[in-house]
Image (cartoon, rainbow, N blue to C red; front, side, top):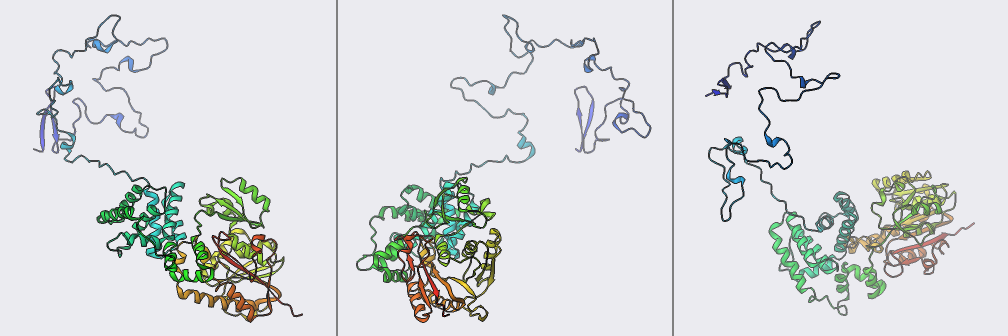
Length: 594
């Protein structure tokens, strides 16, 4: 029934439900709303007196007047308070038994007797539970599985490895992006970077070892990358327990949607643990190229080229060079502060620093996000490798010189040469691609340098209006980058056999073109970050034969003696042998026929 009658305790009948007349009825004796429940009209005075029939307010409901004593005794007709509402008197024992006539306590309110089983079911006729009255099921909280220790760093490392091997990204770019996104603590950041770089640096070796314990080596690339990361921890990282390497790898299978291959991943890695000491690499005596290609993870044609230039031992040392613990090299903006002021600024930083080899270089260790430092962003210092600084020092432009940086991006060399000239003269910074010209412009703006002109120009295309227009020309030529393989572990896999010949032709064309822009008596500096002689010494010897007006000049004294002492037709430094990085520099002067 829509309308139901309900009998109250006083014998009064109340109407409830949808059809109750008048909705919720007011108490008897009330006619309409009380005047004091609506706002007073204009000019109307409200009457706040209690309605007729209501008893007076109790005195204890208003504050006591001056000198008045309040009476807090219970009104007549009220029963006495229960004894248990007052504290027990001295020597009195309180009676906490329930009053006579009260319902007994439920059985489940007392402890079970020995051997008795308690019945916790609700008594018959009892009010139903709230969930049953409201018609819904109580929410069941599921306990979330606890994340395996070390997962964040392995997850980030795998993301970097996949970005490089599956999407073609550069390792440095992928790592920077991942670390910014992941928000790892410093310890996990270092572990993620080391695992990613070690895995990419030794891909050939890891694949060779895995192939010996897999039934189907041509597995899914996603599973292959997880196995590579796991194998890296088992074979190359002494401080990581075997169980941690396998457990985290299995969990990564679940996270990337390959839960069905957890057992396969676990079985392969445990098989590798059992057999790793039994797997033999190729014989270095009979197969030296293949041996180095697998042991040091490099393409066979590149191993052969290095062996042709430096022999087996030299090639092995170059390929074994590691840059994962190398420091970041910084230098001051010489237009904004002196060298001593820069040293004092570094002392205030929390970084671990050490003076570098070059006059303006400093090494910074264990610094996270140095490019976000406020002093860097305000242009007080730059991040620039010592190889790049050495090329600028070899040029040594004088005050007021006209300088050409023919391959200038990202702009560090052009800016350093402008600073060496105290902001005088002019530096033209050429680049082929627009986005790389933008990088130079951003560097110039950050450092607040006025005498640099970024330009989009092709250094292989001859320009008649630039003939003998410059006092100094610096050509930091495009190259294979084999001197930076220890810092860029994925670069060696990007080098193709035919690309070496193509790059040497490009270097030849650039030298032919920009050498015509040097004034008589001017300086031409050629540099690369390669260790291959076809790109360096052989390239310059061929150029000098074609251009007898150029002669090789010694390097300036501001370059360390250790580097200048090996100077012949330029200087070649090798990673792992006589330098932390590999590069080549040659300084030449154009004869004056006055």
